[in-house]
Length: 87
Image (tube, rainbow, N blue to C red; front, side):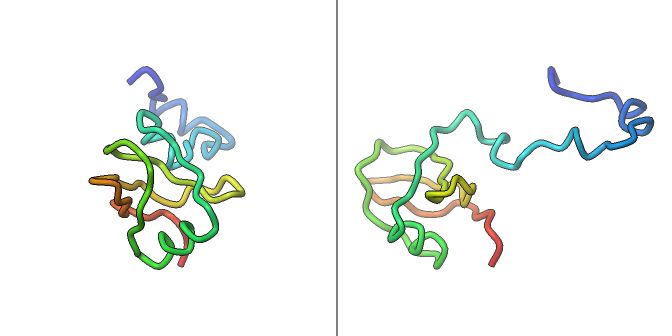
């Protein structure tokens, strides 16, 4: 609500797309993790893999900083909840 923009302001805006937020901003309350090249390959192929992280939900990024997925870690295994990369 604090970040809401009134509809009339959007309708009057010359460049309303400037108000769009990156997808990963929706998950900013979850910690981020940068994956290794091998881990990135596993995520992009829908696989799970072992990690040394606390159980929980994580935002994962590749080495270039591209947001790849929202993941879950349970019992030392990271798996995808929802991927956001182009196939």
